[in-house]
Image 1 (cartoon, rainbow, N blue to C red):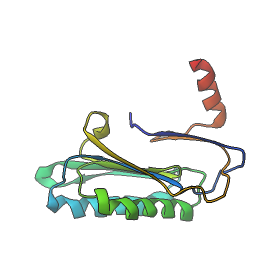
Image 2: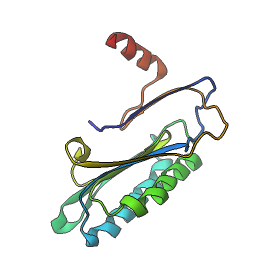
Image 3: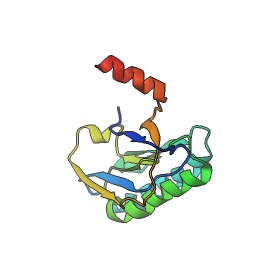
Image 4: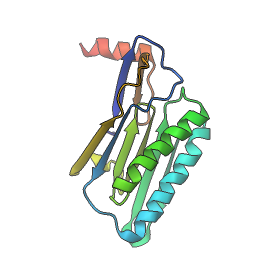
Length: 169
């Protein structure tokens, strides 16, 4: 199970609109082999470039880095976004956080609209020493709406969430 889930509520409808006021990065505090860093970053940019045109707006892949093992990549956008908004969201995250965290062996970048994971093993974030950074660019004056729930590989509808919430109580 991957670790990120966002729950969002607003009085105005935000479905289909990209949200960049909240972004965050989590990285495993293990430096990547210098020979693998550029391969990994290029691999993730390639996944990010193909995800927006996929029917479910996600792309995953495995990069073989020889003796250093395998690297797993996963990128995903909320499915209510259009191709352009998804592409912009993914590239904004990569441009913002790759310079800071791209030399780590595993990392996760996320916003309300899209998420990106790079790991040396599946589920790397479940049991490692993590370094966190969260940033908020602040309120732009726009009120963002409704309720949206996204998890790493699954999307829930509003009614499903309510059912789950009712069963939990």
